[in-house]
Image (cartoon, rainbow, N blue to C red):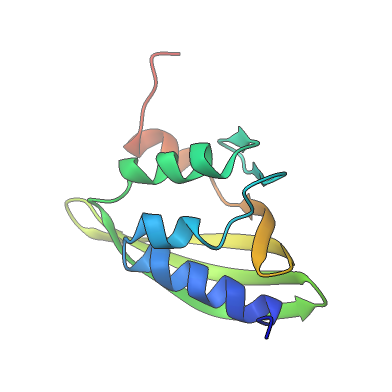
Length: 123
């Protein structure tokens, strides 16, 4: 029996919150996956999951503040809690589209200024 789209997103977010990125990858489409955010534009689930290794050591938790469901589209307002020197929260709007039992698209909207401070680039 197929899972409802919100169940797929819940399982994915739980895996990522548990820092089990290999399990989280199981909920992403093998073909045609897309991720868009202020920081990344990725067209591969494997490439997307590889970006998690930078936050693995600082991720404390992910909490769903509010959810909106519209068919295959699940929009969550998430609180990402990280621990660097002091605990911090970042609010993220996470819009996932689910087809079958896999997430095909994730769009993330957040203030990227804090991200740039945590992960500076040479550019």
